[in-house]
Image (cartoon, rainbow, N blue to C red; front, side, top):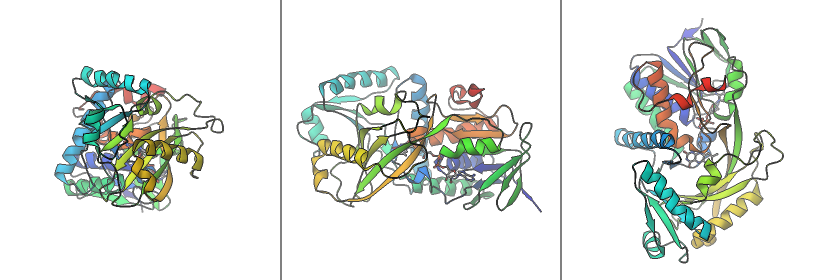
Length: 391
Ligand SMILES: Cc1cc2nc3c(=O)[nH]c(=O)nc-3n(C[C@H](O)[C@H](O)[C@H](O)COP(=O)(O)OP(=O)(O)OC[C@H]3O[C@@H](n4cnc5c(N)ncnc54)[C@H](O)[C@@H]3O)c2cc1C
């Protein structure tokens, strides 16, 4: 005998957990089931950094990211338990051409009605005594922060269950198909049985194209983009705030300079991103490389990025690295995530493709799915993220 649910969320990463939280809030008596073939936060959301980042690249991106980071602060007030640390972010400059980027970034924040401050050498040293003393300057933006993504997933689900006791979470449940494809979703098929439903949300990160295919979506343009990370021993971080090279913005958020489908051609690149952890370690990234689903460590690339991090924070040279690993960012080929209904099948939804900003943008993304499903007001205009654009 099959069971039924009002909504099935496929994927228990940060996006699936945020969708579940916002659906539970908007529909406090509905039966919502979250399925993951592995553990909750067992994939990219458990193998990443936790920079909550406001991006002023365009006014639209600013609206999405700023609203999302505000929602993160509300999540902290409401439930906490995920090492939320509103450190702000320091954009560091080393070379003269990097220094030139600081006022450009400052103006981008100003054009969005926000504020960031340029620091000279002394002000930077006063703020972050562990940084190299010859660094020429930086830009400080107060609105960013750091979280621990894994415990963020559980906090979202805990709060969701508090708001809707019928929210159910099932790790170890692989989705194998959908019924009603092409007209209206009628059921989600899993290895453990069938769940009848009129709404299914695909939030499967780099596996969304494969799960999308099961649901009749021909080719969702999301490609894995690998990132190598390292973390130092506890109680040793030489930095106090979220730090990143100002060139990171162009490296990470600009269009990829290589064809993301030609996985053997990308040599990869890096820009420094360093985060203090609540237990006192320093998390160091961040490399980017298209090489399919390969998660073996690229030692050479990681080594280069660690040397670069040491240039900024020389104290890192004396610290043991206790763990290294690789995570796969879900890179959307047009640089926008897919958040909204799939227009060719009623009741089929997508929430995926957030590349290196999935933690930051998870709260607004979950809200947009819930608001569209319940036909209530969206906090920001969802148009540019709608999946219909690929048809
Ligand atoms: C190195 C690195 C650093 C990063 N740093 C940051 C940062 O500082 N700030 C930031 O905002 N973002 C950052 N990101 C990006 C962020 O981690 C991702 O965008 C985000 O975690 C993606 O979440 P997701 O829920 O889409 O995917 P995932 O976390 O991968 O979740 C997808 C889930 O779907 C499940 N699934 C797949 N197929 C099936 C199936 N058939 N049935 C059931 N379940 C299935 C998987 O098991 C998985 O758990 C970083 C990423 C990396 C790799």
